[in-house]
Amino acid sequence: MRLLATWLINALALLALPYLLSSITIDSFTTALLVAVVLGFVNTVIRPILLILTLPVTVLSLGLFILVINGLMFWAVASMFDGFHVAGFWSAVFGALLYSVISWTLSTLLLQKNEST
View (tube, one colour):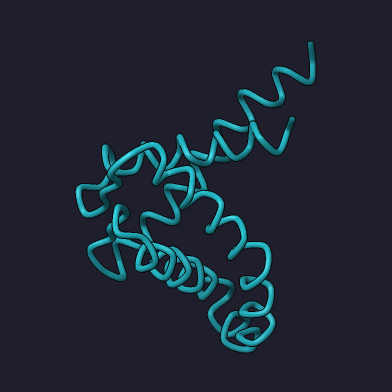
């Protein structure tokens, strides 16, 4: 049940992005659900591999290169779907950052509240 709730929260976070950044568009809730699944898969499987491969650059940049990796993954997932558009690299970096903040905030508010009751 928690996995389904997290999936829906991530889809809602994706739907909020076009209201905050005009350079990101998403066509429908169905597209948001599909993008949330693929983005979750990419973050689970590909991100750790990229983090290990780019560890020297990440250390030299004091961890800021992780923002670049997140933006590139966000941009790559956007290129897989017709209904999800990101205008450019910097839009992808800011979109990934906002997406993580929104999804973390929603999951903290909604899932922690349900665990305490």
